[in-house]
Image 1 (cartoon, rainbow, N blue to C red):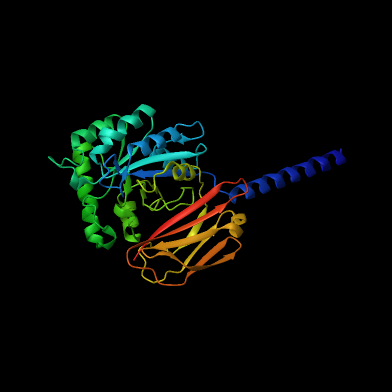
Image 2: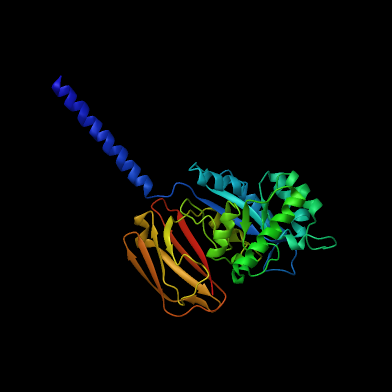
Length: 343
């Protein structure tokens, strides 16, 4: 009997060790991953930097219709991550900024036919009578009734990172007041004009009960992502070719945490950049690139187990600049983390 009990105890210890080991391995890898795409205009060729051709858009939708993908609403993606649920593999979200009229006439009929959810981020100051370029509130209410999620995209679409705290508060409150009047509720998702943000905007959006906010930097979302500075792959005529879309649709989150500088609106130039990785195995293969208006900024990269640090070899130019870090994991997936800076 004593021998039997010893065997049972040994088995119990082994089982406990296996559970701990499994939990440890899982903790070092991301649980969820999602890719969000951003559009503006559809089939309006005189605006190539914000437009996607209808031929390109049709190819995107054909690709997203493949069984390997799961197109979900942004709220579904975020609620799943926030509540520690499980997203399906190759989860995709679709977003559209500005409420251009071409969304209603050219894009929404195709999205609705496919049954694809979409979030429309609306700049409230442009939604006025006799503005032929943008939707009106009757049309937005119609889209909402048909299942389109409505998100906030500021009131004036200005470079809000330069605003004072009081100016930002007025911007958000004016937008919320109009939404409440016109669609009966305030949105819980926000998209920054030009993708520009800073910490004071993060804090305000939290106080006004926004669930999350999106920038315009490339990358995949996972559970370590900053909910108030989420990435989206921007698609236009130049960056909307199907091969790029296919690649982006299949990337996974990189599992970045403890990122510095915490404020994307940088003061120290060049910024000191550092972060940690959930999966230490990615450290040796990670590559990071920073681009500003003059192109790629040369840098030195230092790797310490899970910690990555970058030293830029020149100052960044004024305006927006972007960091992109990628690595290939043991399952041959590309992992992608992006971040936008503003100087």
